[in-house]
Image (cartoon, rainbow, N blue to C red; front, side, top):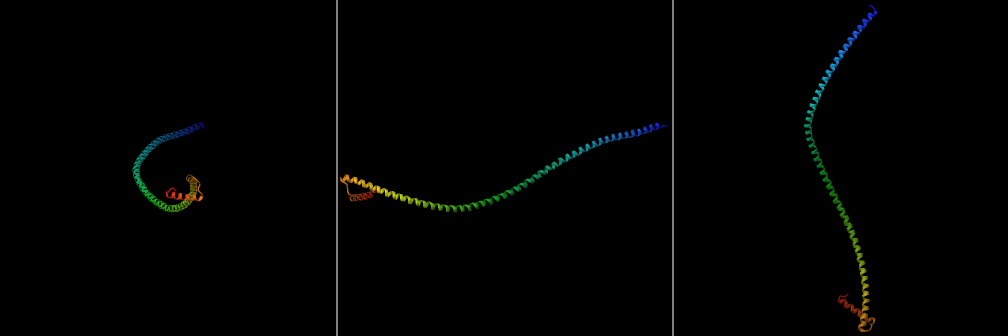
Length: 196
């Protein structure tokens, strides 16, 4: 046998081994693909079962949660109402205390204000009385001055009138003593008749 034939046999044998190995690998690959498809299908079915189970469990939990939520809502409402009533009671007590304190403060300040007002009123009354006293004194002085001025004017007017009357009645002028006596008599008569 020649080397060439031996080489062809070895190459043929190697090729057969390679083809056999290749065929084996192809079968394994097909089997793996088939197994993969089977595994994928089983995984999909398992996933669907898990999703369905999870959905059912979620619906069940939601149902229980609704019941629990209603129960907890009632408990929460009761607690809130209880807390609210306590807070309202505390607020009313504080408001009452503050109201009493404000009333006491107002009464105290009203008493202080009353004292201050009394003092101010007394001071104002004294000042007003003093001012009125001054005004009355001023008016009395002005009245006295006016009275003196008017009496002087009346005396002058009477003297002039008497002089005129005496001239007409007597036909002559009277002397000063006669005029004075006549004036005094006339004034006394006027006072008796409430003319002056």
